[in-house]
Image (cartoon, rainbow, N blue to C red; front, top):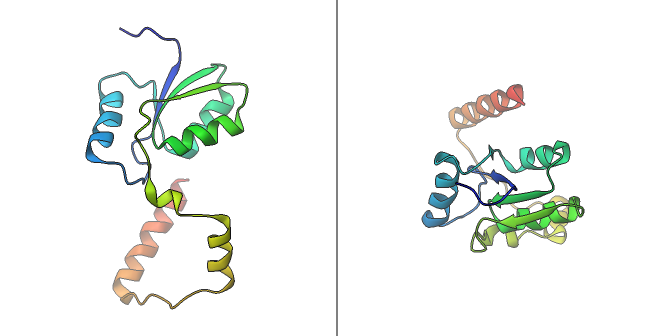
Length: 129
């Protein structure tokens, strides 16, 4: 039984370095029927944009809660846990992205067979989107 009216959004494939306990918590929210919607982070934004609901519980990296609050200041977002932090995401800055685009470092060599399989996988993902 739920005692709140908020929509519960969960991202299971956030790509964040969540601990096993944090991943279990989001998995349980989804699989025990406590999550109303299970989406990727991009899907969460699209869902909130179209939803008439004003309150959301967000089960993913807490940076997503910040992002949603900035994009939708007229709505309320509550993290499912305040401990879902992705330290690698916190290392990325606009300055570092600009620097990597302006002066790329050494390349990465990939075997041709692996490169072709990777291209097929990327094309398949793009075809679906």
